Length: 67
Image (cartoon, rainbow, N blue to C red; front, side, top):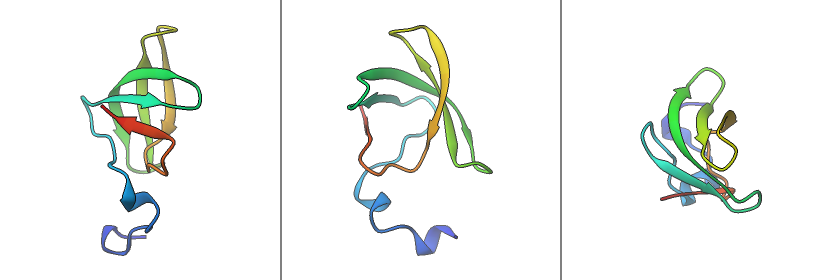
């Protein structure tokens, strides 16, 4: 799918970029986006509560907020 034909549900929410702070409401995880992978549509997030690096889906369906 190209960027011109984007998912209408994902376009309602802003998508995180490298250097953005994100907050996941369900798991209450706050972290800093340190890398994006366009091939897998994922983002690498450094979580400061657990001090771990985790991978999350980059398309925002309302599961995270960009701070």
